[in-house]
Structure formats: C-alpha cells, structure tokens
Length: 213
Image (tube, rainbow, N blue to C red):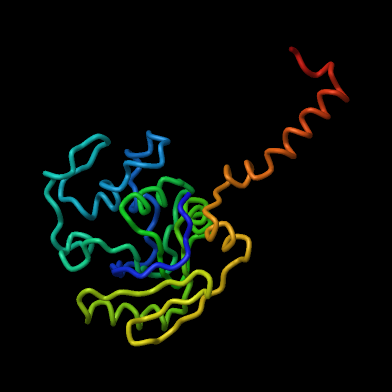
C-alpha cells in the first residue's frame, strides 16, 4: 500500500448525499477479487449513458456530459468532495478499490458510512471528516474556481485552501500510523513474522501430535 503524507491536488465535487457502494461500483463488477481494474467502472451508471458490464472497453462508451467526473475542468482530480453518509449500503471493499484505481487518494465529507470509512484506510485512501459548514464552503469555492486545489496534510491533520484557510480534522492514531507507513492488514501481519515463526516452532515442539510431517 502506498504511503500517504501530504497531497496537493485538484478537487472534484460530488454534490449528492447518501452515495451508496452500489453507485460507486455497481454489483455486476464484483466478480473480480483483484484490487485493480475497477477505475473505468467507477460510478458507472452515472458516468455512462449505456449499461456497463465487466470487460467492456470504456473508451468508446457514451458518457453523460452532466456528470461531474466527465467535465473537462475536473479531469485528473485526486481529491473527491462529497456529502453526508458517503459510502453507505453494502460492505463491498470494491468501492475504495474503484476510487483508488480511478485516482482518488482523499475524500472529504461531513460523514461516512462506518464500513466504507474503515475500508478506505485499509486501501490507502484518507477519508477526511469536516463539518457540514466547512464542506459547504469548499463546495462553493470548488464550483466558483476552475482548477481549485486543496492540500491535505496527514501529519498535521489539516486541509488547507489556496487562500490559506486551514481546517483541522480528527483521526485515530493507529489509522494515521498505518497510512503514513503504507501498512495494510497484510503488511501489519508481516511486521510480526519473526514472532509468528517463533510461536509456530514452539507450538510444534510442545504439541507435536498436532502436526504431520
């Protein structure tokens, strides 16, 4: 998992509340358990005017010109600005996989669904919770200014605007540590590989009847 420290990037505003995981990545794309390849199908039913299926070449599909991620001014955005209860619905981990594969590294919203929020940290995405008033202020600024960028500083737990306004956010210390060091669940386990091997050796010696050579 890639480390997260500081991100200065273009912001895309998704001004919809209660965006669920089926909207983020529709159910027909859940057949794969690989973490990559979902980006072209992110928000599939909103981005495209036809029905998407796994394996489709999305380069020639008709796009919805009114959807924010299809608008030229938001191409290359790596920060998604969202509304309340982002990521609600099912617990599918494919949702953060699709967001990350598309290019988003941080999501800012007034609130997130709990499981989606947890899954973001496990996949290298920083979900930032700001107040509704702060998020509304950012939506206004993004829509009023083409090329609007924010700086998200994980070390300081700050979101900084181009005019110098700073919004602080709270974060669990353990989750912060994992993002800073690029540690997913597998990496956390491998960090204790010597202790695991020591336990396995000791357990084999203490209870040899449980093992077959």
